[in-house]
Length: 424
Image (cartoon, rainbow, N blue to C red; front, top):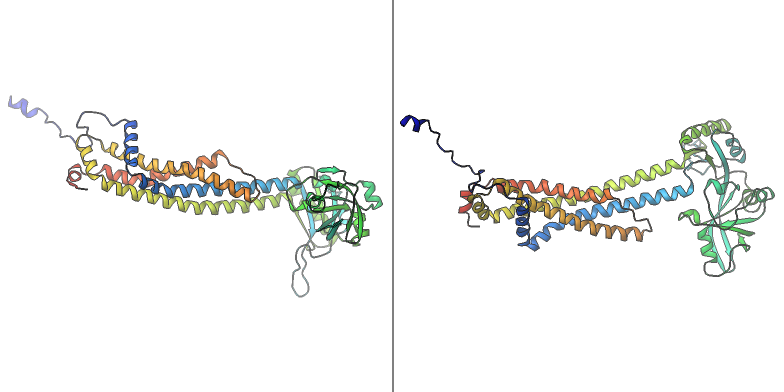
């Protein structure tokens, strides 16, 4: 009998992780409801705790909305100008004193250069361009604008759509007819206050009188504030110069841009015996540079917003630590009657998650409203994607977990005996 007693195993004392009541862990729904009740008991403190997340997420959404609007606006504007265009402009030269002139300040391009470029492989059209600032007058309205002398093919190269009338023809170019096509901004400034149809009207430009044959649809770019006329008429009536402001070259496929740039550079270098008095660049390069600047701005704004999110996360951690201190006795009682450490940890972690996610959702609403107002004032498109909404929510939830984990673990590791003695 003694032997049996000696060999009988003594019962193991239950640990704090054991369920003293014999029940399983608390259901997730029960823990969630307990977390909500705890947060509801301190509504003002919970609201103030969420404020950091609201500001951070709202700033991220507003920043993303703004930069996406800018990027879309840039793409739309350059797409309206044509993305398969290579530009040749006068370059910078160096004098004997070592001083460089600015791009475009050197008169070096000629009509012969433009003709030579038509023979380059993959080139479908070229248009020499001369421009100058003029004073356009109709009746008692006048406007300072830019006049361009171009070939008829320029309409296709620059992707201009007619609003009314027609573009000037090859015959107009050959006979140097004094005709003009007006951009939308010019039409608005000269004819917007009257009911007169611009077509067929006579427009005085400096000392010359031009016949208006067409008006253009708006592109939403500075180019809308322009007047176009045949290059030959421009040289005869406005500026008798053999030099060009630039040459626009249209290619057959955007994938051939790099090769065409190299070929144009080779042709121009042979003609000018130098590569210093001209520059060659593609419209796609402008788009890429603009998009790179937009991405940099996005990163900067999101970085600033990330600081706000981090501060919000620290605020959540601070409040949760205070909550643990205030509820120490409650934690001790719950653990004494059989609550698992995981139940305590999960409840505090869920409280932190609720603060983060609810703050993130409110921040999204505020950010979308603020972003919409910003892009409307800036006259840019309002663009928002699912990823730009889901990402801040995910970040908010992650911050809730990261900054709420330490208080939750601290609460679950309290000694129930010590906790019960606490009078807080």
